[in-house]
Image (cartoon, rainbow, N blue to C red; front, top):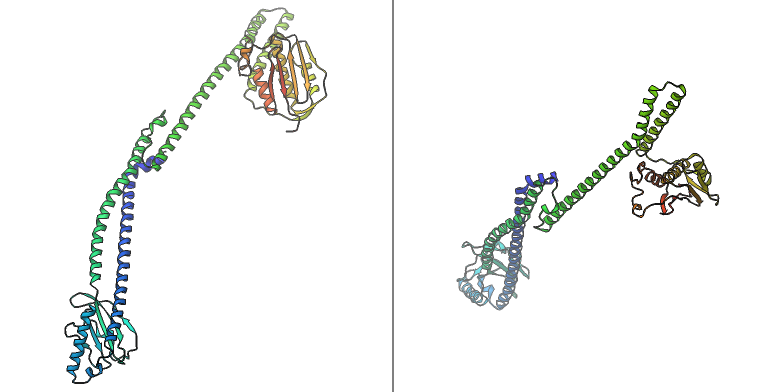
Length: 467
């Protein structure tokens, strides 16, 4: 987000200018390209059309001169014959609507119309070069008056060596030039309009970006997605929606962190209260024992008091050890074991009511950690004893161990909380036994499940196959 802020802040007006220039440049290039293409295409087409027209008219005029006594006009001193041919050419020029025409004999000067002067360069048809049949069209040229013209040349049928040239006006090219000038003016107007439209379009893009920049820079801790407006072009709206989504994710994270912190505070408070409650009783007993020991003179009594103090210290160590187990990861050491053997050892070594009976059942094995299973069974037996049970029945089945006691059972309201950390209904309880037991079972790949409320029945689900 800081990178976006710096970009928008530094390049706000630069972005607007670049967008405007890009719009203007595109409009200008497109307009100029259209003008050039139109002008070039039109001019080439008109010039070609003029050449074809002149070639056709030259052929028609040459055919009209086929019967004329042209050779008489080329003889020295035949001025009258030349004038007659010139008049004939003038008449043909008027009929064809040409600018001028000229006859080029094999030798001597050309014969031109007395009323229509010839303008094309004489080098267009060198008189000394033998002329074959066919028609050629010369290039465009300008007269001394600045008019555009073009000439076409063709041989005269029946008069070997004679060649007829005709000239046509290219005034339409001047019209093309004027049209080009008008188009250039239109291009300027289009450029102006494009500049205005480009400025508006650039503003339509950059102004929402600028406002988004200001809104982002004004964001404070605790800002909500609604602090960002969503408007403008599609791209800007998409960016604003992304910023909103980011703010929403940050808000959700903050809520989750707050809840997690509150939960941790509650757990720490409960842990501190549980530790204080558990340690207070043996500490008080230890304090009384030490006071009595200080005034005891009988050696036997001193020995009994010392034994009692040691027992109090051992009780405190056990309490501290249980709480330290919460911070240690459960790291099972799996092995294939006989479940009935593990249960029998837990009954023999663990706490609980005097009457603990292992029911007859199949001899099954499981892949598990026997020490952790015994710890879970000890926790269940201890809970049964503290709840007031006098008998406990344990049943071993494939992949499970079921523990049932004859105590008062579990209240319906407590069903959803018996596996919560530090939750207990007994004044001397810590609320660690069942949650820690479930944690161990899940680390073993199984679970600890409450089967029935009354009588209280729990099932240890264990894996039967190797992990």
